[in-house]
Image 1 (cartoon, rainbow, N blue to C red):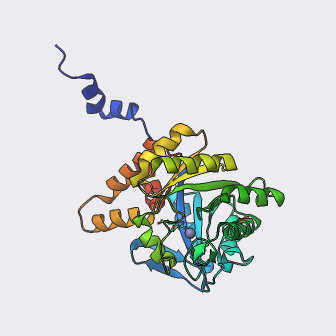
Image 2: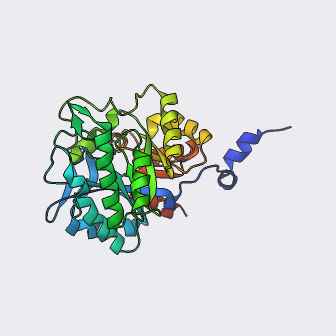
Image 3: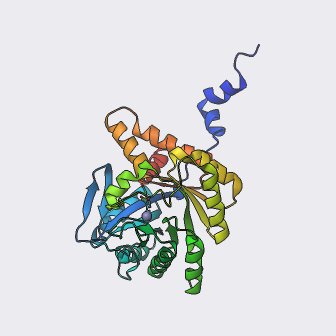
Amino acid sequence: METQTRLRRLRANPQIRCLVNETEIKKSALVYPLFIKEGKGVFEEIPSMPGQYRYGIDTLDRAAEELRNAGVKNVLLFGLPTEKDKTGSGAYAKDGIVQTAVKKLKGMGEFTVITDVCLCEYTSHGHCGALVNGVVDNDKTLRLLQKTALSHAEAGADVVAPSAMADFQVAAIREILDGNGFSSVAIMAYSAKFASALYAPFREAAASAPSFGDRCGYQINPANKREALREALTDEREGADILMVKPAMFYLDVLAEIRKNTLLPLAAYSVSGEYAMIKAAAERGYIDERRTVTESALAAFRAGADILITYHAKELAVWLREKD
Ligand code: PBG
Ligand code: ZN
């Protein structure tokens, strides 16, 4: 008589369970977001993201050391300038904060450097582009995004990641890069970027909340999956090398849908609000941080992500090592 079902047999023995494990978290696929701020000796904890810091150029060594110790190779850079203006000129300044950080990190010779290409951290109004009559003007914005991406490439970035959700941003950036001898620089497109409440801690970290209105004019309505797929397929046609879905945890259906419709590598961005929620609940003892973070990372890979951008990258990498 059969006393155990087949499923039970696969689950009950830890070695068999390991043998039939379908999804692995890949250390080489983890990307750590880094906030770099202008100023001397910057090392500031972000209040809504305990354990996450703003670094300065002269404290970047510390960030690099932590990444090295954990074994994380990939970073996504965000810049926090002291001066903001209407056209976000800090975003494309030759000696801007991100450009300087890219040079320094690439000089270390061990990191893959991805840069966020947007204007909201640099504009006085906090919108992701240049305004005309109070709304983001697509054409003007495209030109500024091109300048920004080019300056990042000139500094040595491996990958640029346009996140402004401007129409034709991928095509415009591909064109300027190719036209200036940077055809080897890849584009990771924030294809499906939803107008999410989960960006709040990031906006605190970057002081980049819009001073009026919201981003619903250019980010995707959380209700719309087909629209997200259209954005992703458009980015693929425009020349994106990697597509991204953001946030991750509330949008895994979107990720799975895009996975079915493209052969391009796909990234999931576990955003600041996801980090903050897990961190806050874990601090209160309501959930176990390690198990929750691991489960959430597995979910992203299971849904079809090839790359996971997460503020928990260093912890995940260490936990993976401990497991072996
Ligand atoms: C810039 C940008 C944002 C995030 C990544 N790139 C902020 C926004 O759109 O408001 C959010 C990332 C996070 O919450 O971790 N446009
Ligand atoms: Zn933006």
